[in-house]
Length: 59
Image (cartoon, one colour):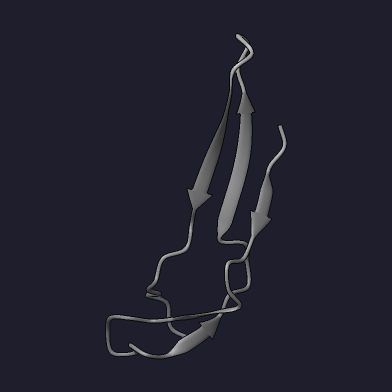
């Protein structure tokens, strides 16, 4: 299996809650791409977006 991970941006902004409008650094890949090959010979990309526009943890 092969997969790649990237960050679409270096910072994100909270959009809800008491800390809305606060920016935080993106520290991990938020977009994953997993190319899939099937036994029949077919192929399909499987994109996975793991970034949420909100965070609930507190620093």
